[in-house]
Amino acid sequence: MSAQTAAQPGGPLLAGPPVAAGSERYEAHLARLGRAPTGAAARSIIPAVEESGLLGRGGGGFPVGRKWRSVAERARGRAVVLVNGAEGEPLSAKDRTLLALRPHLVLDGALLAATAVGADEIVLYVGEQHHVARSEIARALTIHPARRSVRVRLVASPTGYVSGEESAAVHFVNEGFALPTTVPPRPFEVGIHGRPTLVQNVESLAYAALIGRFGPDWYRSAGRGPTPGTSLVTTSGGVRNPVVTEVELGTSIGEVIQATGGTTGDVSAVLVGGYFGGWIAVPDAWRLPLDPAALRAAGHTFGCGVVSVLPARQCGVVATATVITYLASQSARQCGPCVMGLDAIAQVVGRIAACRPSHDDLDRVERWSGQLVGRGACHHPDGAAAFLQSALRVFATEFDFHQVSHHCLAARADAHVA
Image (cartoon, rainbow, N blue to C red; front, side, top):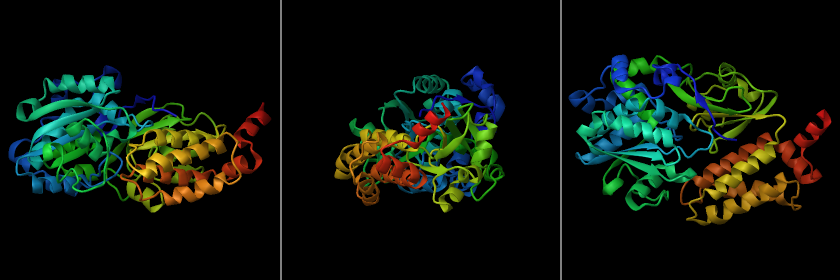
């Protein structure tokens, strides 16, 4: 399971030059969109961002306007904006795609945010493994007005799942170690250089730059359900055309998959939200709207906008073991629930997936996944536990078969077809 995707044109973020043309140049960007607000207009933009209903696109879905106001109230002209493009989620490619294709839109949003919250420094925090994205944002910065307005520096974030967590990002910029923490103060209070810090995902900033130009009503005019707007979505797995595409929030999962080419065959489940999201069984998944509020009401999460399809021929237990093993390896290793809890769970799920379980392995996994929540130094074990609990629900029959019969249903089905 990986995010080897192209991009699909359409929607306000990816509108403009054809994707094949690569990064949009600054002159073309200005000709298409005009200039972003500056001066007094930028300093007074927070109410418009709040009114738009824009939610953060880094995975947490926190209201962007409220986040900006929290920093602005503490800034006194000395805040920092951290542009988060770490994108450590293996199934997501949206942030690196946006940075590579529309870097000036991201920089517009960063400068708008800096002006609005009272920041004199912008840190561009981009994954060290995302070479094209870092190259394009660095090139765009040589032309963009942001470099003449505030201090701007580009920092390569370390490869790793937790590197993009906001407190881990701040810790890395300050100390050189990407370790998350839930201990106050939070970055919006005390962050980079001990100053109030706005940590905002690149997609969120790009939308803010458009809201600054066209207003909150423009943004709210899109959206089919309770959450207004559009969003970038990465499709992958058993689909014909893995892409990063922009969809109207509230579009059903089935519609998104069909619009990007459909599936390659029968499907057993869909992973929504990425590795901190959860599995949803087919056919339930097809009718669910990709809307943060609607998904939350149904017990799911929008996360970072990942829709990954599991073909029926692949084993859900094996796919789950792969993800859990990865998440265990990505622990910050600063507390017992991660160091011992996730490692132990990964080992047990691995034995079940390999059809070599001990007699009580499934019981232990079910018990441990419930005990893990809320006990870590950060939310990493919580996300892993939520993902595992979704797998135990959706693939209950498969887990039982692996545990009791020491065989894989997917392997048997393949053998029967052969």
